[in-house]
Image (tube, rainbow, N blue to C red; front, side):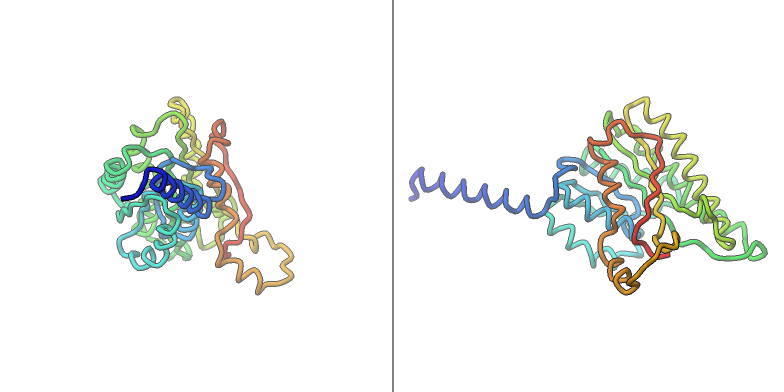
Length: 267
């Protein structure tokens, strides 16, 4: 039988191990104790933000399209290695009931949602106006602006003072390419709708902001080593720091803002 001193010594050693693990898995613990729902974690931004949040001590509810289960499985181990609590919510967002079910399943596990990151955006359909159809237009509107509306409506009762909503849009809203007209229109609607929601949600102390990633090559910057830039794309994008800041207490008075961030995303 071990003495009291021996048990105390072992307990202290175990505590030190836990603390050491925690230090390794977190950067600054800026999101420690928060519960976040990442909508569209199977997109590149959603994936990188999920990992960045986990490294900052945030528990995650990770939403993805059911058909992308293989993509999620490949990088979910990185989330597990951080030691944060994570749940996976495979839901399509093409109707109101799906969005409501997604939010309710997260509440059932976490009991609250402190941060909502909306990062789901299908790739734009490049086509001329003669090739556009009503079905294509409806598809993009449902997947971009309507899914955002349904999600915000579902999550609103569960967000409290200090909560944060971060919506991802696209530079196509400002500078639409000639063949991305319907995608650009949906992104412009996303920005306008989010800014309107910011004014509504602020009455309950909830912040709503928009992040617009701008690919570095779109800015026509002088890139001396293109190969190095290509390698850099494999790493977590610089844009994650913006998402971390907007979710943390350091941005507790920031709302109704648009963050245009030049980052290492492919153009």
